[in-house]
Image 1: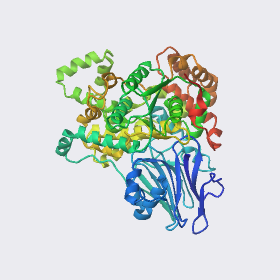
Image 2: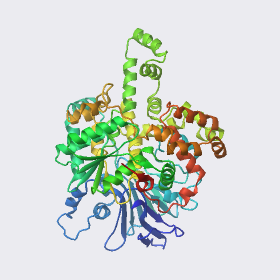
Image 3: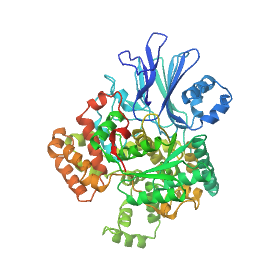
Length: 619
């Protein structure tokens, strides 16, 4: 459990233990298996004749439905794991079988009858799938680390991608942190055969063409969204005892309300208390209202160990500080329930996120009478209020620029101030905005004709994989963690309505609030979203502060040669003075450890889950 691995034509690579092994018709070795480490469960299955083998990382949310379709539910000795279900579907439907799957999954299947390797990633990209395809061989894995550890595959770290890590916390598909490795886009399928590979979309989000039709759909959108949300929760809670990762935010509160309304209340809940104590208080109020057994954890974290585990397991600096803090909560919950759930992905899937709201504000501003705009421009030039000042400056910007400014961890000017000459030369001008251009093209091909649709598509494509990576790094082996809101049918409902219905200046995620009604506490509906982060004490005077001073000391930064030591020192001083939230410093730590210690990734074999590696004690 941890990472799916598929190797065709790599005789020098040591196969994972208990892997399926075979060979092509010409004797080329084949390995399908998994590498132990943090991340989702990995299932394996082989056909009766031994010629077809499948390995699937993640979980199928519609497994029971597929069992009924295949007639497996009534068969006493029928195999029941997700890989076996996929194998049966493939034997009957071929490549079209992938389109019947729902959930977060990465799939590799070797068909010895047709001498081909099939790779597929789930529709919304919750699970990653990386690959390196050549004429004589092909390798794939659901984390970067196993491929980066293969000799001669990855190449050196691609420094041009560092700016994307700082801006968005991840590298958008199909690129990766290594020039020799690619990744499938969400909803993509790759077939490798006869020394060639081809990639195509088996699923694509669609925006309706007729605006009049979208308006009609919007009148019933809340009911349709509620139906799909209820179905998503039912699928993921059928026949199991669940535990809930409970925050005081919109997603977790909605998930608890939906589960309670369906009679599928979780058996227990755990909250990780970080720097936002108000969030922990709201979570406790939600648990008390639902009469739910609830614990609040405040673990002591071994930050140095946590960073090294994350870099080793993920294959690079693709890691969020939330993963380290969520890990202890996941570990505590897993001792009490078979299946865990979290409410992540609400804004990404149901829309109405920050960039959409910011663009809507720009549109309203542009629609004001000329004299009113001139007066507001004069007021905004003073810098106060901040929202007006930002809008008056952004009103002439393109949608991508608005997205990059609103959604990135730090603005381009702030990021570039940290870079040394080599890194500036490698990244070039505005690489973060350039990386979004292909996503805009995808949105247009999906039928987007409005900037609001484009912004929704871009955030969905970037945000869901980032959430998946965050929870995979926080999840120990054998734990089944499910995210009901990240569902393609729910996303399709959101895409079907006009952007102005999906976004609002006054409310976050109006489609969700319309669907859930008054079931949420007012405090939760109105709460400002603050990402889970360390306490101020940990970040400024505790163990994390000590690690930051050590890794980002001027002489060490100068030795690495990629960042400006003076600029990094200024950032640390701002953070210590309470003027910075520490997000950029966390990225600096991850990138520095990744580049300083390449053996962390090259020697990857079996990294322990972050949950057990970082928690010293909790209360």
